[in-house]
Image 1: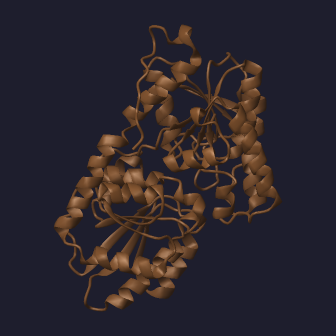
Image 2: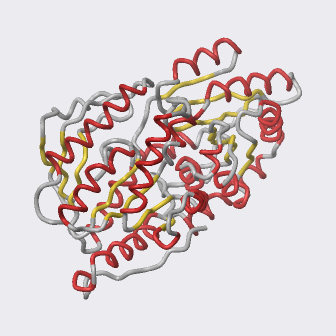
Image 3: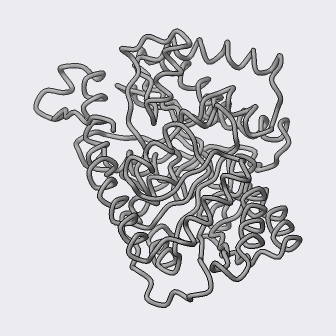
Length: 411
């Protein structure tokens, strides 16, 4: 059960479904018609109450009301519409042995828990964002009554799901602090959509440092702040350091504001349309470093942004406004430079350190990141671990002679 699925640029669900199918599982996907990230149904699809894509794995798509609005009512209606359609139109068919549900959004819990009760099948509930923490941290809604209601609803989900998969040790700690049984929480971090290392650029201009941000430009990423930091770093550097410039590969609801900040502060900004995952490495090859930036909020300290893992795979230096688990990954790998989120002085200092670094140092950071990806974040190792978990829940009869459980230790 997942609201997002390929051809949308969210690889977790698609790669997991294909990986489990190749390992002997029979997989059926219930999802929406593709609309992410623009909030509009892709032109190659015609939305209807229900349709099926050719498999395997078998994919059932159901109607939803797509939206990428920053309005909480609009976003909530979009989430709820898919949950109700999945419940009424998507679930019914052969009894599943295990149900996998992917959050965000948290409304996915509705069809997951109903299916659990109807089919008497265990639920593996994967959490990519902590709710209601993400709701307040992204600026969609301040803390209050709604957050309290979501927190109570999530406690019900935590109690009833047989296993909860999280992407970081920080998420595990948060759940344990909220009273979740530690034995049901499993850490399976994200893997990158692209596994190809970027080439080392041989055409780097001596008077500029080229930064690349790849992905969604939303409220959580605070790219307008990062542009202001670039402007401050360039102004303070004068002629003593190369000027910093930014390329954005992607789009999102905060792109126009980011463009406006760049124009106002004189930052050189280029915006490129999204490209297939297989082409990201080519774009990254022209960059000196890759940018990840998050809001200064405790909700983000416990996560490892999927962008960090993708950047490690690309083998390029990382500069990031990060704290907590994400920063620990970059620093532990010696793959780049981090600074406290939304701290302008620290960001300028980090950008100056990047501009002052030698080409040999940047290449070493990139090699270190690639090495960390290969040792800890490959899709095959994590899907193997998932196969073991699902085989265990499916029971001895299903497991016998078909599934080979394996263990993967999170970094």
